[in-house]
Length: 451
Image (cartoon, rainbow, N blue to C red):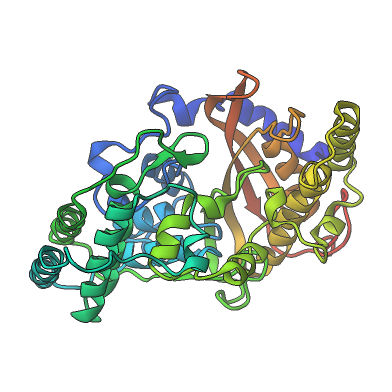
């Protein structure tokens, strides 16, 4: 970090607990009952909460004449909250399932009564099909597609019922409603039908659901969507999401058009983010085979060894960053000392450089689309996934941003969390930046990034 940013950082160190002050650490990341509308149609278990977004919408002084961007928008928390407050918003998401979910969650211009009546018709048809199915072979997925699922993530009978319902959704297809009905199926599938269990990682619960009320669970989710849509009072607010890579924004943005950014990129850990959405991605047809899964992984920021490929070169963006090179070297030395020799373990050091290089590339790309004075908030967390070598993500990202010409406003503590491997408390922070506008130093190498 360069000297001129030290006073700003010292000023904000005093205020680092302000974001969490209103909530205890245990509730800081929880979705409150008052925030369930729209947000809870479908969301990642570990998504940041709407109240955190509101904190920064207010702090950044956004209003109906401004536009906010979330370049790693996931399931759309920033976009939904911005729309609720009448703020124009744009999202970027490389994973097609959460991108689809976000596109549905920010589209409120349908008739909720019509949606519910149509869905009830589908539910009746699906019930009839199941009633007369006893002598026919249960439905399943093609073998190559089925192999994409986490083993035992859904039992045969619930899978059969799900596919029967999906058939009826497509049989009675109505373009006004099918997206909402499909999202309701994704939500019910994950939380009420499958055997999935969510902790720090997605896994399979030891107790399997041999049967599940698939149609009733789905219809309940449709009813929730309809009830939320009835509450809409906001006039039309521009909200758009693009299924593309945050390191290549030209397909989605116009130069000098963004007033603020609030986002949470993947963390540098060994978490395969495609596993979190694998079941619903496969059932709804977003991923049908290994080739499509690999193509998806290639479009994601490199944050785990399972999406590192031979031609990857984002690490060149941080080849002169001494801190990142030192961390990668420490990881590699520890790997050798511990005798870790698997293909994945050998990539631990490299994926660390690819992650921060990808973030440097993203920030460099982003600059041309920001208005001078734009504020940015990046929610990131400390990590020690790679052989328990500590990675202070927030500080490293702040240093990279400064080298790209951004001003560091501060690093706010959002919450702490207990690491399962080390039992140490890890910080989750909001790195707050400001874009002053282009200058001669932007686009040049400075502080170890490749611009």
